[in-house]
Length: 88
Image (cartoon, rainbow, N blue to C red; front, top):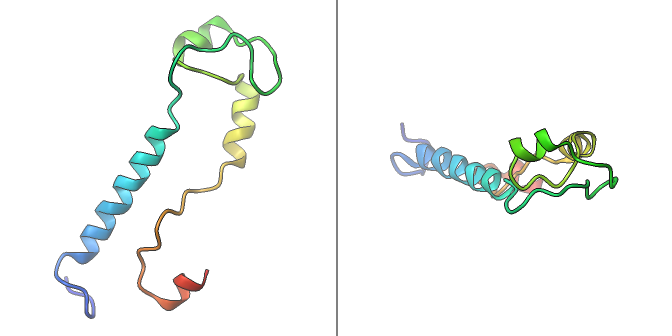
């Protein structure tokens, strides 16, 4: 499906690139290393079960939940060609 001046398959290439970027972003957020015994946020003890379940855990459940709420969606690169999307 050609769209305007875009070459054949350009839309699918944009979709694939966006997915690859999202996967790369998600993988970069996976904790690594040894789990902490106390939360970085509030210094409360992290339960053994959580440390065992999630390798490299840094936060207790409450602090991690707050971090997840605050996280802004990763926008990445503007791959849309419309002028309006470039002004945002």
